[in-house]
Amino acid sequence: MAQIETAPAAESQQDAARRAALTSMKRLAAGLLALMAVIFTVSFALQGRYPWLDYVRAAAEGGMVGAIADWFAVTALFRYPLGLRIPHTNIIANRKDEIGASLGEFVEINFLSEAVIRGKLESVQPSRRLGAWLSTDADAEKSNAEKLTEEFAVAGQGMLSLLGDDAIKDLIESVAREHLVKPEWGPSLGRVGERLVTSGQQHAAVDLLLDRADGWLRAHPGAFGRVVSQRLPSWLPGFVDKLVDDKAYREVLAFVAAARQDRQHPVRQALDDYLSEVMHDLQYEPAMIARVETFKAEVLDNAKLREFAGDTWEAVKASLVDALSDPTSALRVGIRSTLQDIGERLRADAALGARIDRWLADTASYLVANYRHEIAGVITETVERWPAAETAAKIELQVGRDLQFIRINGTVVGALAGLAIFTLANTVAALL
Image 1: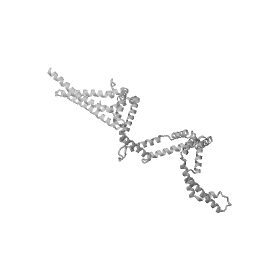
Image 2: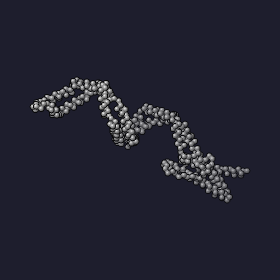
Image 3: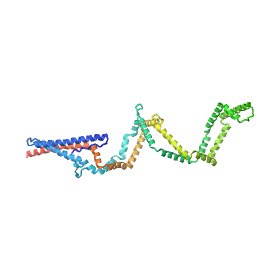
Image 4: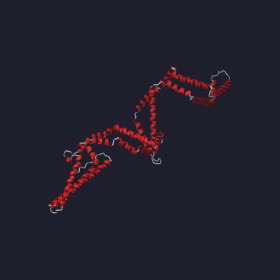
């Protein structure tokens, strides 16, 4: 009667332990039934010689009846007893879908309610727990923030490996074409440049240009002299060339020095006026706008734009992969420090934690209110997809060990009941 199933080829360690415990309890219950049968047989055979064995026989008989009745009851839940298709047996397999629907409804009504979810979140205080978890002792071998950063890094590398390079390049190219190539450059450059010139931002560039010019002239007087000498008539004497070179060199040095020192120097004013005019033409002069568009078309033709998208993605991807794989990279250090800072703030700032807890509770309540039927439906649909025999086996594996105590208790209670009934009957007969 004790039907002992062999474990499936692949199951979790917990299920293997449950199966071993279930098998052990089945053997114990079957052993008690066998013991009652042996006691009944011996006492029945010897009761004529030893009248007191009548009581032992009655107890054993009651124990067997109780054991067999409870074996039938427990077995009928999960399969047909002895393979006989007796009505109202193999209950779980036959009513699998109803059980799944009832279980889903039970979970939906009793667990997926706004009051239950909100109350649980308020009692748990998830923000404070998260803050405490993230802000673990920095002296520990590895903080939780560091562990979480490693998980982020692994997930990020996985995402990068899953992303299709061609698709990303197409996306970059389309974005660049929409926002970089399609708009006219001239007016935008003119407006930006006009604001820069109006605010005097070009002065720093002019200062840098004059500084570089002064430095180059002082470092290369001979080169400047050769440039001047090449433009003088060849019939002039050499000493005249030298005089002209020195004079021109000194004048240019003085001119550059004066322009560097005088913020109102004419050359500076001329540059400001020129830049203002260029910025105006970029915005309003059709010829200038057309020239810029021609330049843009030459620089960003289809092939070059595609190459730009490919180079951009390859560079970004390589940088991200390197940063995610290096524990000392600025990216991972930044993520880790940010997580630790979030943990400290959540742990120390009660008001912030309360706001986050309320947001979590409101979000969970919204999801439960609008999708609890779909969430609970997962249970119903999952049970419906299980084969009937597999459903019965799963449930028996979870609760079967405890149900075997019913058989054991039935054996003991049956024996006591049989003994009590037989004793009472004999007492009544003796009195009559």
